[in-house]
Length: 289
Image (cartoon, rainbow, N blue to C red):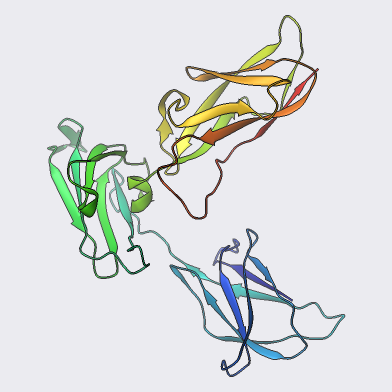
């Protein structure tokens, strides 16, 4: 049987733990976790059951009763999850950054101070003067905090126990809402190519092409000059083609006939993300003739 978990817009919800019990919920049988398609597959006898679900920041109707029917019936059970929706700023010039923080043991990280010091000069925001200074927020008993910041603004941030002598420089995304932990700890999120791949190159005098590559972090903020300190540009087989960053251009040079792929890899591994989602928009196919 398959359990398919989706949210209110029918998008799949991965990494949901599905536990199977008897109808009374007193006997545990088995469990599985939903994949990227929101599906958890389990092998069960033709009996009546109940199921419970768990994923952090996701709510479910608990428990849910179901029956596994004999073949040729298809036992596919749809479950709707209520996923966390970030609050949105009412002011179009601001980004409402919100999110949760946890202790090493998973408990809420309460009463943690986060201080933001503006790195930009005084500015007029819809005619109102904004004087650069310090603003701060403290997590509540649930480890939750939210703060409104100027969109595209640069800030030096100090975070409670991380040490006030080691500030982090962050850039606020140009959007109405953002996940605060993502703003504080961004990683390379995606890359786009113009023109988009796949690419075909002929070995000879014109054995290379130039494409514009734009690198964005996990908040959608564009990183300058293809982020040379944050990503490694390469190909799966450098004997067929190589990828060479040059400013805002990526030169893809053919070496020998064959097929390979352009890849982008994060070089900064100081921020660990679970699950570790790969950089979007790559790899890209390259054919050399």
